[in-house]
Figure (cartoon, rainbow, N blue to C red):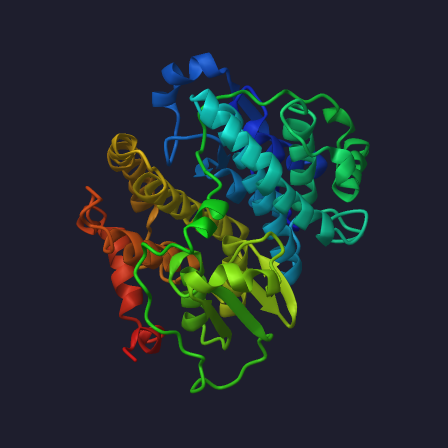
Length: 451
C-alpha cells in the first residue's frame, strides 16, 4: 500500500509470541515502525479493565487512535501496509487459505497439548493431531508451494505464518510432534529463507509462546467432517444457478460442500448477492465417505472452490475471494480490516456455540460449556460487534461480506436454535437490522424464493 504518511500503530498483547508474533514479524519485515505494548501475563487481569478491548481479548491494534481486534484481520491489514498482501484476488485467496490452514494446525496442536486437563484425553487428542490432522494440513500446504516462497518469487504474509509455525510450534515442541520440519522441505525452506533474511535480521531471537488465555479459535474442521457436515443445521433454500442473470466476465466457479448450510452458506449468499453464476455441488452427508476419495480436497475437507479448474480451500478465504468478485470486499485497507474482524468475530461466535452445543458428548460438561457461551462468550463478541455498526450496514451505507456473515449467523444460529441461546436478536438491534435488510433485499430475493 503506497501512502504519503504511515499511520500511527500501537500493538497490544502479552509479553509473549502467540497470536501477535506474526503481526510483529510482518511489521518488522516491512520496516514499519510501531509501538509494541507487551503486558506480562500475571499483570493482565489488573490491567484489563483499563484497556480498550473491542471483544475483551488481545491482540489489538490502534491505528491513528482507533482500536481494532482479531489477530488474522490485523495481520492482513499490516501485510497490506508492508506490501505482503497480494493485489491479485487469486493470489490473495492462495495466501489467505495458507494462513487459515496454518492457524488451524496451530490451534489443533495447542488445544490438544495445553487446553485438555484430562491426561488420557490429552494423549488421545495429541495422537489424532499427530497422526491425522497435522499430516493432512501440512502435507496439503507442502504441495501448494510453487517457488522459494509459497506463491513463487515474492513473499507474502502466508510465508510469515509459515515461519511463525516453524518457530513457535515445530521447533519449540519437537518432543510432542511426530512430523518434523525435514519431512516438509518446502515449508522448512521458506522458514529458513525468512529467518536468514535481511529484513528480519534484527529479530533473530524469538520468545517462546506462553500458555495463556487469548482469542479462542478451536480447529473444528475434522470434527465437523466426522459429523457428516453440520447435520444439526437447517437446510438452506435451494440456490439459483443464475440462469436469469446476464452472463459476466467472472471465472468458472464450482463450490463443493455437504447438502446443507454450514460453512458454505455465506459463500453461496455472497455469490447470490453479487449475481455471480456458480456450480453448487451438494453432497449428502451419508454419501460423503464413499465420494471423498474421488474429490480434489487440498486439506481433506470441504468446502472447496474450483476457479477455472484449480481447487482452493478454507471457507473464510473462499468467502473473501468471492466477495472481491461480488464487490463486497472493501478496497480501503481500514474498511477491509473492519470487515475482516467482524467476520472473524462471527465465526468465533459460531464455533463457540457449535462446539458447546454439539461437540461435547458429556451432558454435564455440555451444559457448563453452553452456560459459558451464553453468559460470557456471545455477549462479549456480539456486544462488541453491535457497538461497531455505523449505519444500515456494518461499515455504513454500503454492504460488505461482513453483513452477509451477520445474516448467516442470524439464520443458522440465532433463529435456528433459540431454545439453546439466551441472547435473542432483539438484544442486538443493529445486527438484527442488518440481517433483516439483507434477507428482504432484492439481491437475495431469488435465493430465498421457495422452490
